[in-house]
Amino acid sequence: MLHTRICDRLKVAHPILGAPMAGAAGGELAAAVSEAGGFGMIGGTTPDGPDALCAMIRAAKARTDRPFGVGFISSAPGLDALVRVALDEGVAALAHSFADPTPWVQAAHDAGVKVFAQVQTVAQARIAAHAGVDLIAAQGTEAGGHTGYSGLLPFLPAVIDAAEGIPVVAAGGIADGRGLAAALMLGAEGAWIGTRFVASAEALSAPWAKSRVVEAGTDDTVLTRVYDLATQAPFPPTVGDRVLRNDYTDEWHGRNDEVVRNREELAGRIGASIQAGDTRVAPVRAGNAAGLIHDIRPAGEILRSIVEEAERILRERPRQVIR
Image (cartoon, rainbow, N blue to C red; front, side, top):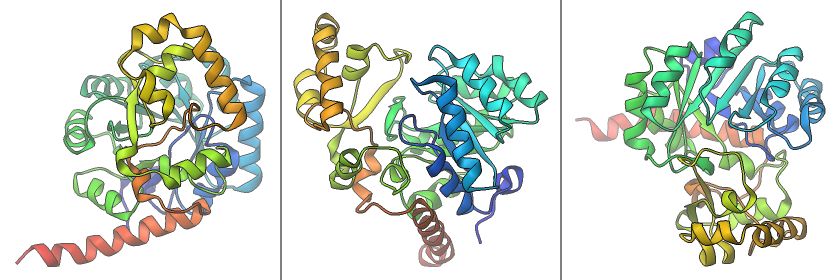
């Protein structure tokens, strides 16, 4: 049975965390991941504010008595109110991405809540380690949605080296047991999985978005800023947005200055396309791992299949390659 340091620290059976994807990871998905023995996470940055986050947390509590957490786009406005809700509701962990986690560590620890930091550079990993976080997620550029520009294969060991003994999990491009096994062999304590759980029964994602993820291949994504620039999304300029390619990205990718000049018109088109489920324009955020996803299944089944495959590989593969 797979067992790493985070299994004990997070009180879970399996070293898998569900990524806190805004708009996809709600209370039902977080609970399903936790019930299956992983660590579920809610995407806590919601345009509907603290009340909506409170409702998602309580929905998860109604479905599981196992630990789960909430993650934030920490560069977005209104963060303090959302963090306060999560602390008041007594979640097991808070995760911060796209900003220095230092300002929020002490209050969480005082409340008995762990703090995770998702990082896209080694420098960010050093800052997170110095801040005293409990876990670092090293996010490779293969990840879906908002991510950096370093490939996971060299980035993960570099973050582990910089983490000063803090457990590090791998994020980006992991959708099956092969990816989990590879991350563990590189020294990770587990995997932080997003895109595979988008294509789950419990994800909040619209059916048309889930279907596009299942249909997509590994070559069908692009790391771009053409949605963020049009909608003035609150992400640092050092962060890109990995989405499935469509007519909109084909037309506008690489034309950032023109996107900004046409921002009002393009934002209107994007909003209308989301309402209509028109994937020729609407963003579908997914990583390169989309090419490994062939169905929509319950999150618990997904998690268990990943663990079982990883265990089999880690037992069998060494005998095949070592003489």
